[in-house]
Length: 126
Image 1 (tube, helix red, strand yellow):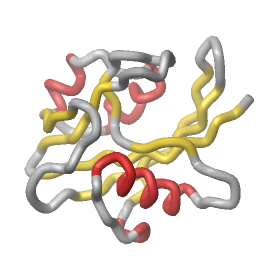
Image 2 (spheres, helix red, strand yellow; image 1 turned 90 degrees about the vertical axis):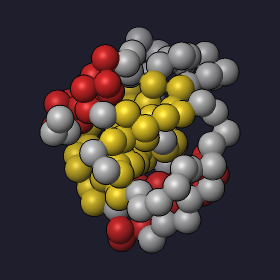
Image 3 (cartoon, helix red, strand yellow; image 1 turned 180 degrees about the vertical axis):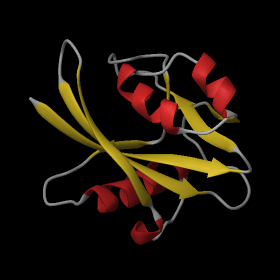
Image 4 (cartoon, helix red, strand yellow; image 1 turned 135 degrees about the horizontal axis):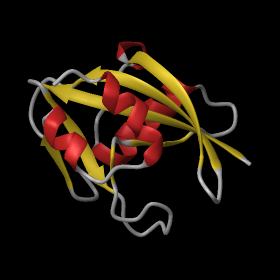
């Protein structure tokens, strides 16, 4: 089963927003970029727009998100295709529904993150 996901690599002043997964059972406790599953008849950018509004209270213009890469990764229980988008965050703190924080690339590389994020972490400049 392939699960399509849209993810935002939010950055501001050489830091990236990550949040901790909790309560889902899959990858609990790991730090990840915000985003989520792409629904039927939804483009990756539309999903990104919806997910950022739901998770962080952020309203974005989908075209403002710059596609970084799409990665397919197989976990033991599922295969995911993650569409990563770079998005500049201009001011303030996202309104979050789970713990999150701004981190440098060095700090991000030290946090426990999903295996599917590793190729993107290598692309980010310290």
